[in-house]
Length: 228
Image (cartoon, rainbow, N blue to C red; front, top):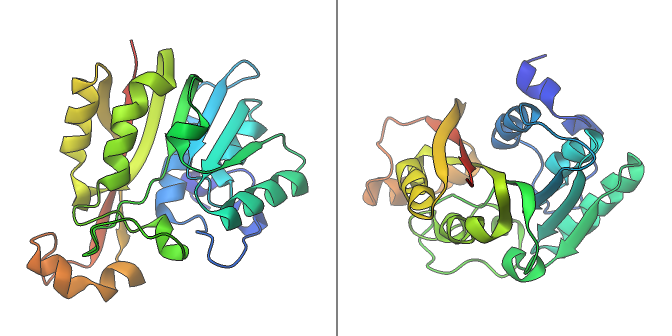
């Protein structure tokens, strides 16, 4: 078993998921390893943006943190709540837009695996499992919102952990976070085989200059930012 898999507790195999809810994959596991390297405890307030099954929120709760999770999908909210009950972990799971649901609150740690796959559609999907990955033509629709909100979401000394694809501009993310007054850097990388979503839109990605005909592997990254 890899150290990445070991970082996620409960394990992916122990998590329930309603139909259409994004299950932990390579990006989740890479972020879980980064989360395992953060100091967490009873006084640590954690926000997860985009809960999915609640895997990362449960990992933080297992470490004793006070955790709030937000997702736009009712199925994901229900799934995270069910998993919290099954594993007897305290988890506050909210439905809706993360900025509106957390207005006025600040956190010690924000963790997020946002949608980051480029798609021809200019807007975000209103429903369906594709809400977990479709993120506009450059893959940055949600990422840019999180970058803009990070300074108001984090307490002084607070940290942000965000995972996304090398395809959607990690340098731009670091630059945006830095411009917002945070220190930011790439702290982890991994490569995974192209999944069915990328394979299904290969021709479009090549037309946009986001992929080459020979590409079969996707680079995943974790960006860590800290508010002074």
